[in-house]
Amino acid sequence: MADAGPPVALMAFGLVLWLAVNATLAGISIQTVGVILFLARAVWLAVELVQFRAFAGRRRAPAVRDEPVVRERDVY
Image (cartoon, rainbow, N blue to C red):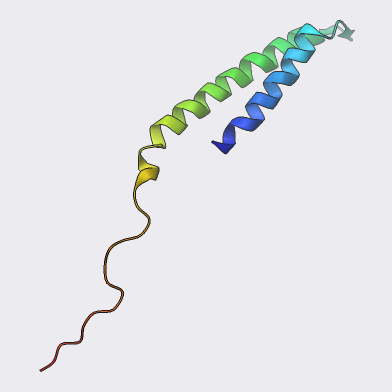
């Protein structure tokens, strides 16, 4: 599940902006940006987890077939 890293990292960044930073930048609340980042990345993580669960059964198929590589030659 390698695709879960970016949403978790951006969720952490959003939480830091939401809970630890108390500033406004030209009328934009940094805390509001943090909440939006956190919620959007939480939805992204949920979608990644649903996709992982949906395709997990398909990955378990064997990659190697039990077929012979060389056929026996027919003798006439």
